[in-house]
Amino acid sequence: MRLHIFGASGSGVTTLGKALSEKLDIEYFDSDDFFWLKTEVPFTEKQNPEIRNTIVSDKLHTTENWIFGGSIIHWGENIFPAFDLIIFLYLPPEIRMERLKKREYERYGDEIFTHPEKTQKYQEFMEWAKDYDYNTGIANRTLKAHLEWLSEMNIPFIEISGDYELQQKMDMVLDAINRKSEK
Image (tube, rainbow, N blue to C red; front, side, top):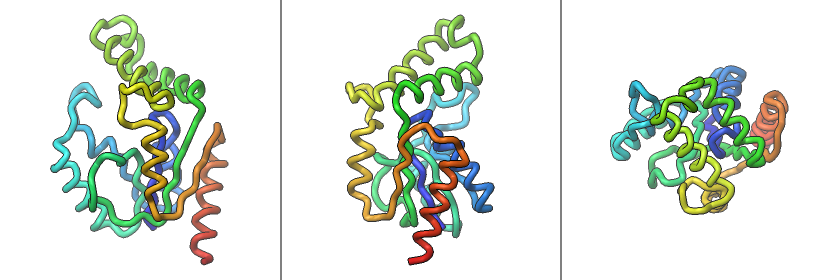
């Protein structure tokens, strides 16, 4: 089984992916682990795309069952094995942005308000994340881009749109997996 979960930052992709990974006893891979280099300040240095694509392709082609979480819409062609199911998560922007504010504060504390460089990075990130729904040109990872990518996929998918509890989302995905396996 090869599942791909994606959505905007703060939509719950990693949380759902890790919970399903545990429930199904298959490995979860997060796109951030391939996209970003491991640095003292996380999410600041991007991995070379050719290296990233080689690493992720090798990993996913040599692992039988997995869940891959995160947006891959601009990564290139022929990197990923065929997905068995795609799960698209969507949260209204006001809920998602509040989640991101909370997450960023939990990660970095008061420094996002008191340390000038971290304040700037926080504000830039929040503007980038907000652009997902408003498509003002800051980000290339937008709702519009995700929906266009999804429309090009000839793979079964489900969309989970709304603020559901984790267990409800898991039940929706497991139900879709069961329906697919019954065919």
